Image (cartoon, rainbow, N blue to C red; front, side, top):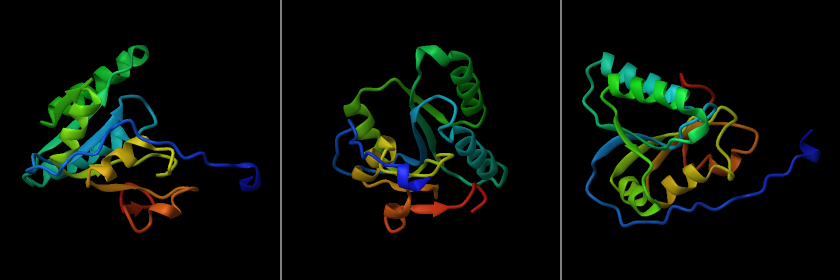
Length: 152
């Protein structure tokens, strides 16, 4: 019931950084855990690799201690797809990495919203964000590329 639902906006702990020379075409950024859309990011990389499209990708992430088996699986899949792994970086390092990035693939299963600090961090570092529509995504229609599912 939307009358009982309230969205509380959050800020990002990642600072803004001056745009730098491009190093990455595509990144996924955030905590490496289930429900963050990482599988869809890897699926996109696989599809681009199948088509022999030249691009540089990276997974910029934090590995939480509680879910190492999932993180290990994701790391293995990224390695197979030649996706650079940039793990457990500081906020300043992440800011610099985002400043070297063109596009972030952040397909949150419940859609992008103001509570997604990773999307906000990418945007303040002038990274074009691709994500999914959700109940609270209307604010992002003009500032991100939104689809209804991974095939959009």
